[in-house]
Image 1 (cartoon, one colour):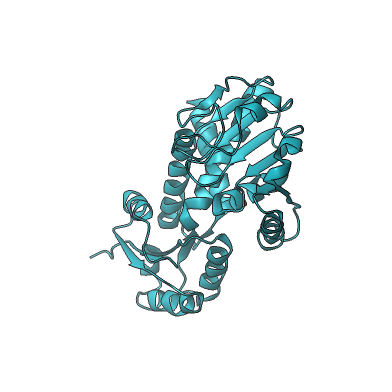
Image 2: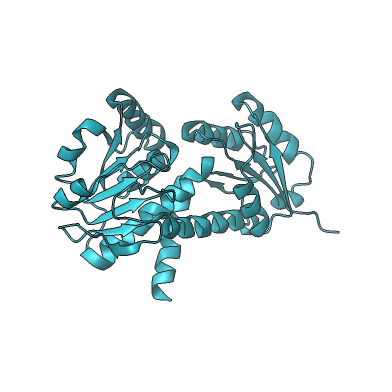
Length: 304
């Protein structure tokens, strides 16, 4: 009798995301077992309990998923999980805190696609603003875009906090190879004068970019909003926009809404969960891998 596919799902929160559980089961994991309120110091013990309970042959049917709400903490837990393996007792692990990594990957991949198909350019050298960018999705999107060659600035209500988050992204996620800047909401109008792309990644139901600022942006090409709750995070961009011209934009910018981003996010997360099952060797997945599969999905969809 073959062993079932078991995904051990760790979260620092008091509840495991039902979304992630559904995604895991739909991707082929037979059992998705929750571990809540997990502390960083507990990761090694949990991982080693999982790997030593099965033979090396059957470990291919075992995996670790790391959720929570903090990007750095999730990445640290993923690193701990990897260090806890004792070859040949080793399993795949995937970090996606609050779905931030796959959501950010979907947003950046969608924006890149619009730049290529509608403006004959790429992310390389583009000025990008991550509005409300101090949260998990904003952090991940900023790092992904910066790694793709864009010039990124995280915008927050408090400059000190935005600077702290930007520094953390550069050091912890970018290994010092990227330079993400910070800015305050109060200076948003000035930054919009040179912005090519805007990501709205703040809390739901809060407008981060007004119609006036959209109209005043001379270089704006793409505006993407992860918010599906009215009012839109970006004026003129609704949840159904998918490369749709933004009414009132004098630069001919197009909008990408939450449903278009969510569709790519869904497929990216599904493919990574399946990759854990299908890979012959253990894999350790995070935002970089999410962007890879998001890009692949967008390209395949464009060709269809």
